[in-house]
Image (cartoon, rainbow, N blue to C red; front, side):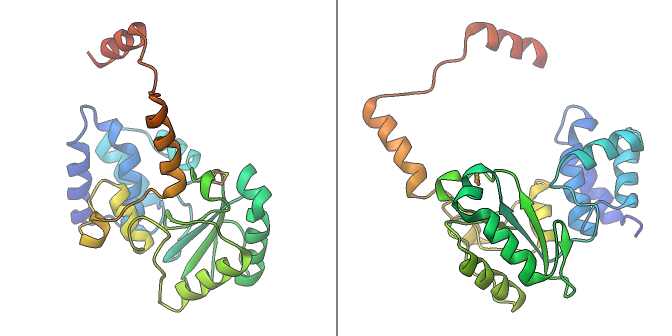
Amino acid sequence: MPVTEETRTKAREIIARYPRPRSALLPMLHLVQAEEGYITPDGIGLCVEELGLTRAEVGAVATFYTMYKRGPTGEYLVSVCTNTLCGLLGGDEIYATLREYLGVGHNETTDDGMITLEHAECLAACDHAPVVTVNYEYFDNQSEESAVRLVDDLRAGTPPRPTRGAPLCGFREISRQLAGFLDERPEARDAVSIAEPGLAGLRLAVERGERAPEYPEATLATTERKEA
Ligand code: FES
């Protein structure tokens, strides 16, 4: 579908945030997903025109990162972590159960257009393993049974509240947020995204007086030179 003028205006708003246009490519690709549901040829064309890149350059980035989808995505992207810790604690079984239950494989979407399933690498929540995310919001400490209940609720139009963080929204809306446009819902603004296991380590470090090491002078000097 041809890109609308509204999308082009938003794209230029994103580009204006960066010193060089090409730095806007990643959020621009999220914007394309917000408008089109996935990375379409017209969306790639928008990035080419507005950022002065070649189609090969945009395509190389869009196909490298798994967050950019090459086909229509459902209302909810359900990601099951099958990396080492989650896999050992049941993530592999959760993914296999959902694949069977939903009748779709990796990066495939249910016929009702509600759910796209994927197995994912570490979702950065190993202290809550096994973890499932829905549109990148966390559902911690899952089991095969709870994951089936989760997708049932999503398909029934009664999305449950994530274990922590903001309430769920649709895939296009979360893509808009990833493009850098704020989630204005008060319940999202006030949401707390860290839970007890994450705080325990911090508390221990404070009790022991531990802190992250300072950057060596040489590193700072290199960074400043690059930014100049
Ligand atoms: S291994 Fe699953 S969140 Fe890290």
